Length: 252
Image (cartoon, rainbow, N blue to C red):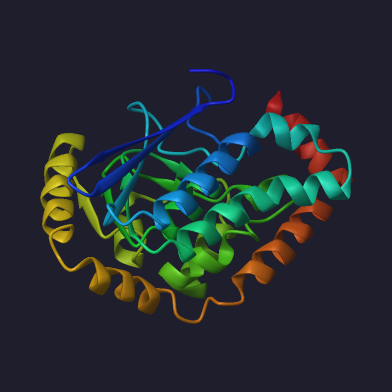
């Protein structure tokens, strides 16, 4: 695996499984976010695919969010906005994809990783799938992913999550709030249930599934604009003295 990470897709019985990976806790540098966005667009047009499973490599974290090294390297507003638009593009690609997306959240999700889980149409998780939004602690905020997380768990729950940026929320909390559809004790139990669920779901009328996807995302038609506006907010904040100092302390 390179420092840029990896992304590959396998297909079986009309189910496409996208697997992403990165040595830094499955975090996403911009190039990897772009690859995922393009892969989702491509799979959306394929008539031989009924369903998509999104998962990450390894047995550690599901996703640690955006690349910390790239965040540190942001030096101006344009770079900052482009950096944060990476997750905006992925979430919009997931939203507009014609296929239902099932998330396999095997471990911890932080920041953008929580956004990815929320953008899935249905999610399988384990007791190890704790979650955290740490952005406020470094002087920014989860502005890009807020709409999709709020869509799943509501404003009250995202306030609880966002305003306690150093506190891990348990997978049980995620399940109670609606972020995780199912939570299992072990990865093997999760994978057995995931296989059974996706096999059955993929046997249904693809057109009905695609129409159901549209229903699930009603009211989000303005997100192409909204999420890019949110990326600009973060792009401005990341240049603040507070954030630069916090990032340096965090890196130490």
